[in-house]
Image 1 (cartoon, one colour):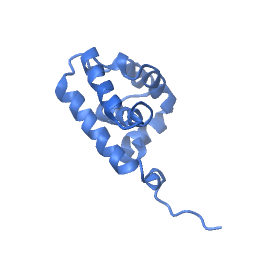
Image 2 (tube, one colour):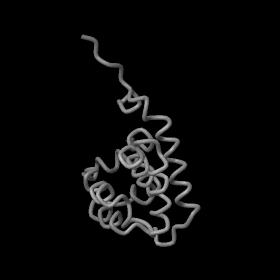
Image 3 (cartoon, one colour):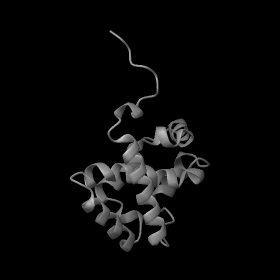
Image 4 (cartoon, helix red, strand yellow):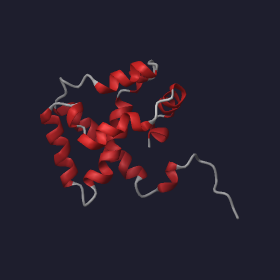
Length: 130
């Protein structure tokens, strides 16, 4: 998803050797609870529960992608060590309703664009014919 919505960030992460497992392990296990204030996490989880049947398993992936892209300008300036330290302490302590609503809206748009159109996840080349 990140490769499609922010190719520059994707290229930078690849260049510095940052595996998406470095970024997503805690996000998947803690459902972003450690990355934002409790009130924001509760609003986020409310959206997961409201999503039909796949909120936590599917919508969360789009939330994580949009969350990462939100920090793209800062992350693209960092080497691997600084990047890994930064993602462990994102500056979200002051996040409020506006930031979480923006994140939810962007994730919903990404899910609407990509979820039922798996071809969007390819690199754009045409499939090989056998």
